[in-house]
Image (cartoon, rainbow, N blue to C red; front, top):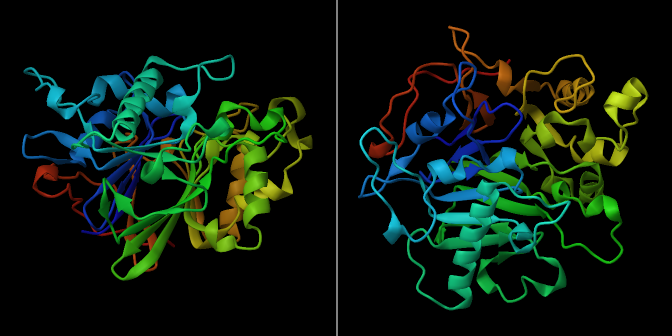
Length: 387
């Protein structure tokens, strides 16, 4: 199967699915809102793209939570199974089966206590509790069954992650296994979060600065880096400046064919200045702009946000959109927005890219089949070539 990356329309929030050539699926964040007239049923969209196991339970092979803000984890308790798989309850008539997370990928935020700068929604608390359950199994050297695996992405301060051994991924290391199995169809290079040091100022202690930043390399056949996808949660300007300082002499580690602008196309990932207060006088950080500007030829930047208007709202921010468009214009690429990707009936639909030998190609909008249980859902159209 061809690799596919799907950006779900979730307003100001993130929810992205990677379907690899191997057939494995990685979900990055979720924002599953209560259904209404203008709210897409992205839970249904997700289930249509998942495989089921022998007991007809849908599953993701891995789920990466970039950070525990509510708009990145909303819907977890309602739609996902938490706890040992032996406790899985079959759905009642009319209910959707809960989705199994075979392996959790989480930042060390799960080890932090709630505070004024680290508040948690009920879904975020549930994620943390499940992550700690899985970590404890490793610490206690218990048998790891299906649905028990976890990776902690990045070291924590004060030695909180020092004894995690094989489940700890350090900055600069590359993930090549999913749910304990080697997978040659992808690589995940961890760029952030870094453990906080004693010299960090207060701007680096905010929750958004603990976002996982990862460069995914997605394969097409033997072309390992057919698509490089840079995902950064809600990381703000200070972190992107640090990313640039770390990688300005090795830009291959931050280049991309697909970028999801951090914090829903927020100005705060590009500048310390307030857009609503300073407007056009707001100053772009040259370092953050360079870190986020390493686009390969024909790259796409996909804002997962509300529709972007010329006003003082942030996020999404019109000035940030202009900066990202200047990046894509420089490489004959394109800036896209999930909120305005619609079908022929004017309904907002998921934005999909099929990975080809020469990079990501946006797919035509069409009705997909629901044959996921037989090996993955398919789309009944040919890719729409960029240009």
